[in-house]
Amino acid sequence: MPPDDVMIAGTAEGDKVSEVSEQPRALRFAIIGAGMAGILSAIKLRENGYTDFTVFEKADRVGGTWRENTYPGLSCDVPSHLYSYSFAPTPEWNHRYSAGAEIQAYFERVAREHDITDEIRFGDEVTSSRFVDGRWRVETAGGHRDEFDVVIAATGVLHHPRYPDLDGLDDFEGAVFHSSRWDHDVKLDGARIGIVGTGSTAVQMTSALASRAGRLTLFQRTAQWIMPAENPPYSDDDKATFRTNPEQLAELRTNLTQMFDVFANAIVDADSPEMKMVAGMCLDNLESNVRDPELREALRPDYQAACKRLIVSPDFYEAIQQPNAELVTDRIERVEPAGVRTADGTLHELDVLVLATGFKTDAFMRPMTVIGRDGETLSRAWAARPNAYMSISIPDFPNFFMLNGPNGPVGNFSLIEVAELQFAYIMQLVEPLRSGEYREVSASQDAMEEHEAARVKAAEKTVWVTGCRSWYLDDRGIPATWPWSFDRFRSEMQRPRDGAFEYR
Ligand code: NAP
Image 1 (cartoon, helix red, strand yellow):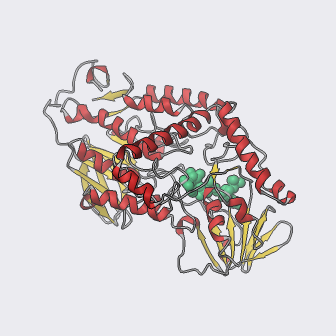
Image 2 (cartoon, protein in one colour):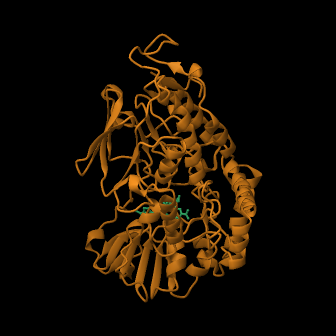
Image 3 (cartoon, helix red, strand yellow):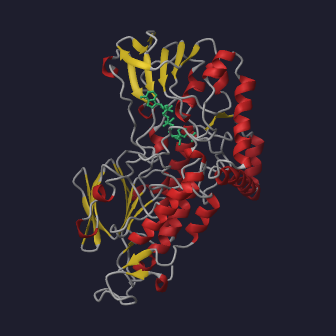
């Protein structure tokens, strides 16, 4: 962004703070998190000529959500040739929707091949970032301290498990764990397995476990619309063709992008013809593939398709109709040592209880302490709820940026593309810091307030407010998401708006 266009705070417009010299500066970057967005940041920083950076990762491997989630049936409902970095396509995906372990291996390989692993501090969690004298002082749980010019929080959204508040959970005598904390020592074959929840996680798990469990009980609080999607494998011939014809691989990605754009652009208009088409496909899936009328009614949602995040599955209905599988819609009364007691008085005896109950999606980089300019704390800035201009920058937190931060696009599409676009935007924001022209940049309060008001207004038309409970909705019932088309997001990310950022 040309510095001429930016608003300059704290000085007469056009003046520069006296002690800032216009010498190019070798900026130091801290990246927090080595998941999809952290790996991307490290690779792209280098590509942009920034070589002085540290990636902080609290775990002992890269991968983020793909490292943490290892439940049976885990896959990504965005096709793999789309859910990959634009700069690291691979001909080797085994399925249209590849398994979680393969996705994790992809991220590990990309990190290795781009030689960023040595820049990652594994096993040390960032506990605080404090802006002092124009730089960020970063501290870790292990006592490490360092200073950086710029911090990029790449800490993910679906990261902090949400545990249900069920009476008696601690009394259960079998194995109990959250879906993202899978205990691989627990025997599954032949076991009586209970799953709480019917989100994407529970649905994928049900498909994978129904054939292995002695008995599988799915505790459904809310029925889900299921979008049917075949998951064919790529043959050796397909892969060989992609290897020798990269342009064919690129064309496939373009086609998938266009296909997903139709959906991403449609969800922001609940009455759009495309939304009606999606609803029709889900309804047809239910009517055609669930044979028992009673079960069909139990599985029929009473809200519009895609109001909750749309679930994509080729085989969930088959799985739940297996003789050893049972759908339980009675409310969970409590957990007892032997299993789950529902409101109708039935005790569902279980060996394993999986809590597929989702994530606290409003935590972002917290519990890390973040203290910005003049002692402003993140807990104060976010006292009502998380917010950031364009999901990226918070006023008074200069040179602190988020990837996949609050209120960004989180629908059924590739968060990799979102992060890539956001990263390129951040690179434009820091350019005047590199040139030595300014030392600090953050979104202006006015820009954030205007953006937020427009966002809340636009959300009224989206499918997410058509009458369902979902993790997209904030405490006011307003979707904490990008309410405009994905095309508009791409276009916003091309270049920061004039006057939206304050430079000092
Ligand atoms: P989720 O979508 O938030 O679903 C949580 C489920 O748990 C809901 O069915 C919810 O019921 C139920 N639940 C929560 N508390 C409960 C309680 N106290 N008693 C009974 N039921 C309770 O979580 P998720 O399935 O882990 O998925 C989270 C997100 O992860 C997805 O939306 C998606 O973005 C991502 N994900 C993606 C993929 C993929 O393939 N790309 C796979 C897995 C996950 P209600 O519906 O009644 O609230």
